[in-house]
Image (cartoon, rainbow, N blue to C red):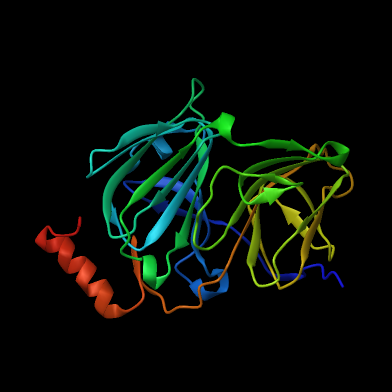
Length: 287
């Protein structure tokens, strides 16, 4: 029997500062990481004021995680200690596996109107892969399927599957799904989920309802309980202008492992964390 997932947690992303002074909204991160296992953090860094983002994210380390950057507007220039460099354009994704360690920088730039926006998700690596060699996956806009569904619903499939169409990102330990879902006004969307997965949605724009009739608005994060499906409706409160709802729908297989986390480094034990920061101090961080 199919079980529609109910809502476990509903909250709004909170304004914060990161990097050298980038103003962004944090949907979750640093508090109660087990609730979102295997995910650690989701940042929404959209802005139309260059003064709030141009300082960017200068050189900083990562170990033990994957960072997934998805751009909507503007660009992010990146470079690292291994000599890799490039630019993430609108509609594109960079899936970076930090593994044993990387030191990199990410510098956002706006479009011709100064608009810049995107998301960064952190996914944990299991103990067996914490010290794997770093790797990058650069996914262009053209590589991401844009699936047209019933009633005008559209789904960009970055990772996982929707309506029988698979995304370009494969071979990820936590078997994630990462979908960008757009619902026209007064439509619905139901999507199957694996029973054991952690599933959450983040509202990019518009408003709507969950299957349990909880109201969803821009900047809302909804974490679901267990079940086989999630369901959404794009409806608005009375007497409001309304064009639909767009949201990220993300899921993955929990690791169920201990988490030792300090800043940009996530390991399994405090001893491993101390080793990572000692490597930084001694110049042996890059393996």
